[in-house]
Amino acid sequence: MSFAIPMMAMGADYPWLTFRMADGTEMSIASEGLAINYSDGYLQLKSSTVDQSISCQEVKSMKFTTSPAAVDGISGISSSEAEYFDISGKNMGVFATVDDARKALPSGTYIVRSKDKTIKLIF
Image (cartoon, rainbow, N blue to C red; front, side):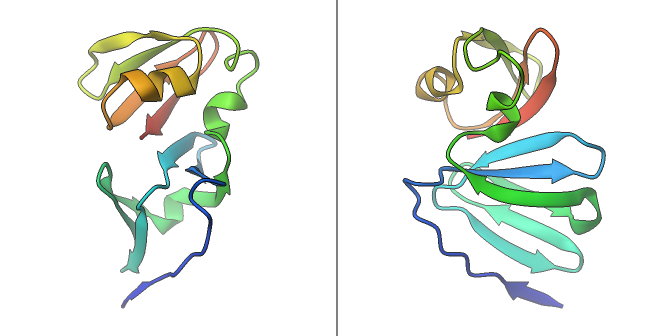
């Protein structure tokens, strides 16, 4: 069984879609141009920067936000520096805010490490 879920959101108002996974981790994805399809128990996410499938069993919740909640929700990270790594583990730099990193880095998947938490971010 496969079907598409139409979602209405003003892109400028909600530039991030954040998933809270069953294991408690969070993953934020840039929502610009994002299409979400459901097929055989998987959410298929596609945009110009994302092509990923996520098992529905792994997703606890998802919501559109004005900022990547997984990052801004970390105590102190919005005002302190965090390290960004690409998926191969290469250090891409240290940035004071997510907005600074998004402006400086190419679109892609990043592991963001603050002093007390590590999350995955896609933009």
